[in-house]
Amino acid sequence: MLSRVARPGVYIGQVTMYRFLSSSRAPGNPSPRALCFLFHDNRILLKKTGETWIIPRYADDLSVACRVGENYYIGSYDGTDCYAGLLSEERKIEGCEGIPLREIYYTLGEETFALAGRAFQTAFFHHHHLFCGVCGKPTEIKDKPSERICPACGTHVYPQQAPAVIMSVTRGDTILLARSPRFRNNLYSVLAGFVDPGESLEDAVKREVREECGIEVKNLRYFSSQSWPFPNSLMIGFTAEYASGEIVIDEEEIVDAAWYRFDNLPKVPDEVSISGRLIKNFVEQFY
Ligand SMILES: [Zn+2]
Figure 1: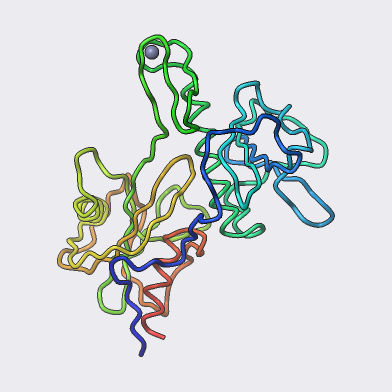
Figure 2: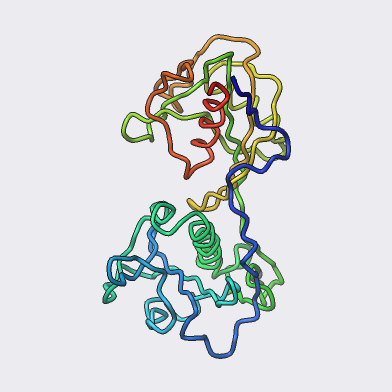
């Protein structure tokens, strides 16, 4: 039997964006080849070329789909300039279609998914901070793409990240899986929850497992992290072991939870999400 338990600091599965260079220095005239990441809700606008869906280029004149001032230069990818924007309304653009952002992981790959997630979060930030939260006056971009400044009162605002812990809890050859009322298709997954203000990640793991299932955990280990742009979460994954307690579910958060043996799992998330990777990591220990 192989043992492949995640070790602290081990990098598992998540792409690095080494080919992306963040910058606010937008070129004077956008290149026709510039990539345009445009969104409506959680859908990204893709263009169909033959049988393939691709990220549209500036030459496709998609900038007209955004309100003036809501199309943002975010940097370059492999030397190609990238822009991001939120579509102000549903709009038919010839040859283009809105695809759920999550689905491009399967069609365009993990790296494009990560880049599109970055673009979405940048556009989302700007769209939601056009006015100052302190004095209500319009904000401006000065030197940095990820900063807005209120000229009236001097407030600076930056993109917000919502840290959330996600953890596999194991007990011998079983893993604790739960079904949220939000899950479709009778899906079961590991537990997760947002970190409270003032709380450490480790405390958040222990609290979430205790609150949602009445279980105490031990031997927490860092697994990996994943940006989750729905709309701005940063998922921080841990593995943990059962310490004590019996399952008592929080019925507001969970409709069912149980220990599942590695070879008898219910329907679980796939590897696009860190939840799927945590479960896979557990199962692989036994093969
Ligand atoms: Zn202000």
